[in-house]
Length: 442
Ligand code: GLU
Image 1 (spheres, rainbow, N blue to C red):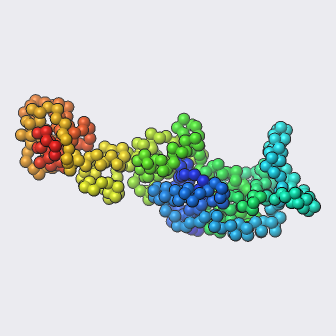
Image 2: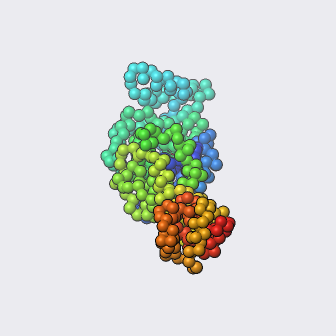
């Protein structure tokens, strides 16, 4: 069996860490299993969906490194949903209802006052033809509900284990609105059947939907896929992330300089039994992907963990990967020297003048620096130059520790901290080093 999964965002907002995690887990599972990954825009809600959000989601997924083998837009598939609606009507599983939102609200309140669950009473099922004609004569248009079996629907959830929803505790879901627009519950199942989706992997906020949807798969004669419901992401203090989702959009994180592989490394492992560690490629993450690593407990997200992971991703990033985003003139040797000292890739550019000039040196102790310049060996420099040179200076001046090293670092790099001088000195080279030690810009 070829694994076929889909990520099905509603393009009514930006991609954030929560839904990016769903996308990533689907993708990793597909790649691990040699299967197919579909991107499906759930855009039947034309009032809230926009083309900008849809294209933003596509570019955010690409930034994360996720590619898709198939693409569909629900708004372009209306005739498929109409077919399914006709079949459900013919099978007696879809019935017209005429209550207004206010009437439904009143029914719910009455039930709640009697401490009963707010389940739709199926009053519309009891209408006679004459009632319907009268209601339609008054200008009412029907919405259509799916007649649930009212039974225990069970499935073996790949994350939650044995799971069940008792559909007698639910209202018959509305599948078609008054204006004829099919709703997600139906459109999703029709698409999952047509595209042969084998595994529905989504957030646990959809667990309850799974009961009616399994009934729908069966009513439409489709194969019921496997389900995996991922536990929610929460803040490190246990609070929900919903209020922060704006700042946790992928676009925002990218603008802050967070590495895509840091986001992926974190999202792939949060809420699993595997450690969060910086990975350099999605293939690495896909290699040992398994639903068995995922737990039922909410996954805790921490900004600081993402920030430090991003730095650690940079520390291990090879030159070929970094190069397209580095400024011209940044050599492999310089990248390897500075990558361990930066928090964002764009910070690497600050080190370009250290190697290539021009740099205004910071001269703290001119006499010591001229002594150092005199002791500087002729080029070319290599990794042995710095230890040999500073050993000589130590013997000559009696300086040690910070007093020995810091004036040299300040003159040669104009910075108090940075990569090891042993690595930087050969990149600076004899000419620039000599000039800087004498206080000249070079
Ligand atoms: N459009 C739905 C959502 O964004 C998809 C849910 C599903 O994967 O079935 O929540």
